Image (cartoon, rainbow, N blue to C red; front, side):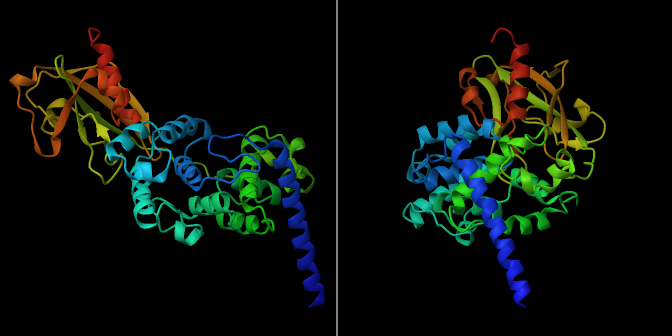
Length: 372
C-alpha cells in the first residue's frame, strides 16, 4: 500500500510539473484575442460566453469579426437580451450552425431577466442554459470563473493523444483522451491552463507540421519521441457524403427586389431567411415540372441559370439549380401558407439573415441580372 501511495504522489508531481511548464510557456507566448482578458485583467463572463458559443465548430479567424460586431452592437448581456431576434440572426448570418444564434438570444434573456445579468459559474449550472454542452460549459467555467474544469476541444484532443501516444482512432478515443487530460490539470490557474492548452494545439501542436522542438512538453511526448506525432490523433476514414439536389426559385421584381421567406424554426438553418426551394433530396437532378408545386409562384416565367450553386454541409453536399423569374408583383398573387414571405429591396439584401448557401443563390441570380 505505501508503494502504491508513493506512485500516486510521483504521478501527481509529474502532472503538476507538466502544468507548470505549460503555464510558463503560456505566460510568454499567449495569443492576444479580442475576447481574451489581458494578463492581470479579470475576464468578462459575457465576452467569454459569447466567444465560446461562436467558436463552436468554427475557427478563431472566422469568429473575430463577428465577435467585434456583436460587442459593438450589444456590449452587455442586457443589451443582447433587449435585441430583436431578427437583428441577432442578421448579424449572425454567415457564421453557420444557425441554431446557435437562437440559443444565444435565449440565454441572454434568461441571464438578464432571471439571473440579474450574472452568469452561473459552475459547469453544471452553465449546462442548464440553452446551447451549452459539456465542452462549452467547462470552457466558460474555467476561463471566466477560474473553476477547475476539464476543457477538451479538438486542439486539446490532438495534444493529449500525441503526449500519451494514444493510437486508438477518433471518435472511439475521446473517452480515454478525456481521462488522460483530467490527470494533467493543475492545482490553480484553471482558466489560463485551459487557454494554454488551446494555444498549444493551435500554434505548436498543429495537425500538420507540428513544431515539436518548440513545445514545452516535447521531452515527455510519446509521439514526438517515437517520430509519429503527425499521425495522431488517428481517425477512421470518413464516409463519403451523400449529394442532395434541389431547385431554388428566385423571384425578382425590378421595383420591389427579391422574394425571400423564413425557414421553419426546427431543422437545418432553422429560423433563417431563405430563397424558396424544392425539398433537398438525394437522387437525380429534379425536373422543374415535377417540383413547380413547391414554388411560391408556379405560373411565373421560370428560366434556369446555366451554372449550379454548390454548398457543403457537415453531413451532405448540396447541388442547387437556380430558376429565376422576373415579374411584376402587381400582376401575380404569390402563394401563401408555408410560402409566405416578403419582398426585400436590392439594397437591403446584404442586411438579411441569409445563410451562406442562400447568399450564393441570390448573388448568382443577381449577377445574371446585370442591370440591377
